[in-house]
Length: 597
Image (cartoon, rainbow, N blue to C red; front, side, top):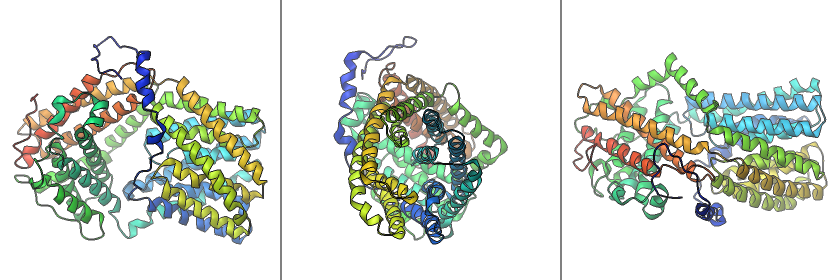
């Protein structure tokens, strides 16, 4: 990608010689490299096992294992919302259950009204595109749309009669209600658990930033957003800290009424924020001491009392409160603003539209191609194609590699465990529960590793309706995986996303407005503390959105050149403004002025 400045009003088109630099970003090794597991990997893993075990064993006891596909649709809802505070998680998981039931209802009605494979594939592709857009727009988080598409696509090709649909949907809603209880059960033991984990992550990210004394001062020689992070980890640490602090504030805002624990968590986030907006010269720099931040993070993440940090000099306790902002968000106008923001993400100018078109075309092509080749279960190809589509083409290529490798290895695992699963119905149930746990335990290391467990679980679900020839299942799954991945990625390359650059430009304008508002409140001695805090958090949010938009656009092909110089200047100016807010919380003489170059 070129680093040449782009003149305003004269958008340039990416030249072909720039393509090799993009192709170099598609190397398979980084896509398949294992990472550290998530700090909460066991939560969705245990939740889905508990939420699935009760319906599975109940159906086993009454001899109706053929109905597991409907209860599983509700049980899988327990995978969602584990990063949300419980007040918001209750609403989010309830929405997931209703969305799952709605998609299943469309599939069951369609399956009962027609046996045309062409119609079923078209409906499956359309559902996959709608589910992708809704999950991205609502930012429900992992596992995203893939679970919805898996359930609705499989139901399209299951024999169905109209009279059976109410009972099957009742099973889904009943299992979903139990999954909702499982997702919220930890609140009885640790009410502020999600908030504590979010704040601990912010403190840990701030500690990394504070430990790098040059993270704030090396911008002057910064060559550009993409090259900068590879050559110099300082800006990357700073942006990671900004994202973690923003996520912690959002978690606290959504957590409900203030409690003493949440008050202490707010104070900790303020100290984490100070560490990344105005990092000290090294260890021992007061609130920016990385060792102190790490110690606070460990105690915050633990089960003991939340540490109570000292108030920053010259700052009243109420400055840390976010009750006023929380009240604004919960008021009628705040809820209306949230709905308007959601509608903008779904509107005609949404950057999600090209991704929806990719999903629709890719899933349809994969399904029709497999049907033309005589594959009996084209929904596997639909799900494979749907799972590939990520924020940009580079990430979609990575997911293509991961999905293909994981599914092919998973087929081998299925062949090994199939004899064990056929020992008895109880053995089949236990195998499914085991692979459900393993999938969530491994998928945070890398998607391909989780797919090694997901594939045998999906194949074993077919055994609940009766035994199938192993060779047929394995052959169909291999063919569906290869064809689905190939056609899905082909659709991603053919459907360009030129709106990615437009999203960057919109994020730049939003960042400029947020920075100007923050500067006005900082310069106004009469501004209320809550107004200053709100302006500062709005600026942090805009910088996080700007970085996300820039990273997304950098991974897209065949689009207008990015305004990299303007993006870099906006990030520098935004972080300088954040640094200029630090003196009011304590002595930070090293913080640059807002207009400093």
